[in-house]
Length: 472
Image (cartoon, rainbow, N blue to C red; front, top):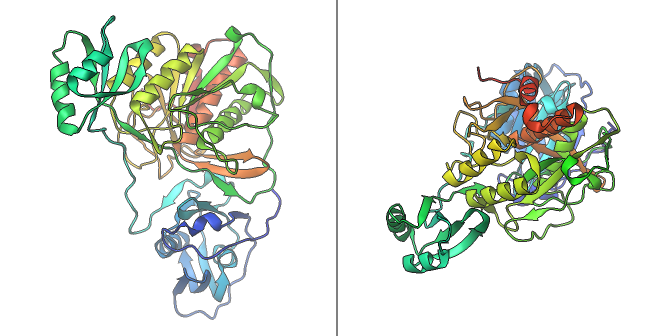
């Protein structure tokens, strides 16, 4: 990579939105000698003027990073088994120079976040290997998705009319999957929805009644002041509709991937209305689309003409969240449009019978599913990755260590890198999390199918061997 000039805006206050003004930068460490005069330990991180003073000697790296996380509220990740004794003495240095002095010959990348403190990656070999989270003492709990208390998802028996039923219940139809005879109903309040649920369970015109759940919008994609990224080259092989290996990307809207890769992207499907996508930065969906192609390129020869195609399915539109209903509808439409692989770089906690049923029926048709295990440490179930029909992917490093931010539940099937560096409009961006890991694995699945000439459903065993299956 090219060496980078340091550029820094106003010092980021705790939780402030000023991080959006910062240019992220990457530094490959140069050794800074220690002056032996220090006798007092001190770390003064002035949030107001962005200047740092320190007087530290032989402080173990982990202890230093814990103090740094508490002082700055940064999310800090370090490459496992990295050791360093922090020894430095200086006054009122800019943040970039301070980090250089403090981290010595270690490399690091500081990445701004939208409306949140930056992320700092500290590493010896590669930024992608910095997976161990250093926790601040007052870390905020991660948000979880929950049930929409005033809604139901109702599947009717053939020939029944939803409008008549909704009118009788005093509900409004806010979403429909007519192909599946399934509808999203909104009620006046939670009590009305609860009463309707009890009534519908005994209604002879109703096949099933389910709850609807929020699914949070995936995380931000963060800009990096990097030089050119390692390139990969995939060419679109001219194939008929039936010969394509289609990856349905259930996500946010996908922008142009540039002239090199647009031929590998099919016309998108919009479930939640057309999204108004800003030009400046890539969406999460765009980053996942490129990550899927990067995963495929790791298996296919460079410049390979491929039948792989990405089918973007936008289930968010302009909304801050989507629902399990819309994820199910998006899944059905992707499968109906020919997707043999479905990528879920998203997740929530709501166990939706409707979504699960759509997945089960598609699995019977030979579709394979890949889902992000979730970015909350522990073993909590994440839907849809939790479903047995879905290959659940967590994030980790090359040594097989699960990233400290990632889910390690018993439902997890394997792991891949949780860091993806992508390019958009001649700028470099970083996406971190199990979303990226799942996208890599979907790319692997597509490449294995392309390379072997087999359907994706026939390369699952090979895929699981590749990503390190954990189940017996």
